[in-house]
Image 1 (tube, helix red, strand yellow):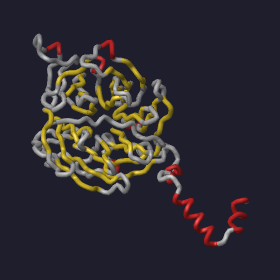
Image 2: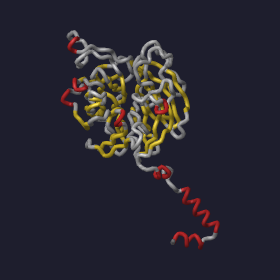
Image 3: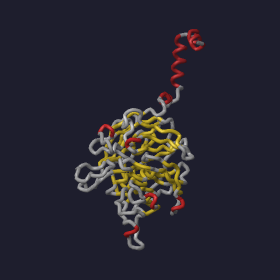
Length: 370
């Protein structure tokens, strides 16, 4: 009431100037504050073919999304892609087909990360770690593909091997850099985390443990904000008779040259959900994509490992979340989430969601690399 009375006492021009001034001083992000926590909409749709988006990284006002993360691509004639979307409009800005893939063999892109120069590193299961100049489009192999190593029970003494019960092929998955420029890459089927030295070359075994030998093992990984620990997801400890995930954990390891089995610690235990990609917010909370088809969503963990809350589908079991794979932050307090949709395979669900959480990114390490 007092505000209305004050306006009636002001000349019309003065009132107009007061209104303009109040609008000019409104914080730039205030319009996003009107969005409720957990509000989600489809920002963009990944091209089909190939579909099955996985990795996502944001640089400026562009989100770079990679795919397809799937098996059975041999002979499809479609190269793997990185697609740049405008984070404000969802418009496709540019598409980067991967160069040099043998399309007669299985080929796929998994996750992505940036260096200090704005070059994008793409985990390609066939080529290795590909460095992409997003301005020129030039591509080069920065590190070779992770090797297929035998199960230790079948290996010759002194030969690199995998602590798995049976031989399994490599499956390079997520990537993160440390301050020294080392790249860490999870191998979901060989119970191994690899490390690539600054400058690239051959990936080296960094950590192995039979506890990672599960139907789908080491997956999303990130360094904590202090840069002292690696957090990574183990997607499924088992699969039940109905084909549903059992278990799933978030583990931690110290960022040292040679972590031991005793260094592996459980940060959070899931039951029936499949944790996939992860990302730290500036709040210190850990955001976890839950990829199990009927338990899809985003789990938000406190710094002590307890779950703060969970964002899940309310009515349709596959909307808006359909096996989300990976997470990045935009500048407006939202998560950008790739929907992998590996079980439903609905083309319209191969998308990028914008999910409002009122948090900002804990800055990722973008090392200076030769």
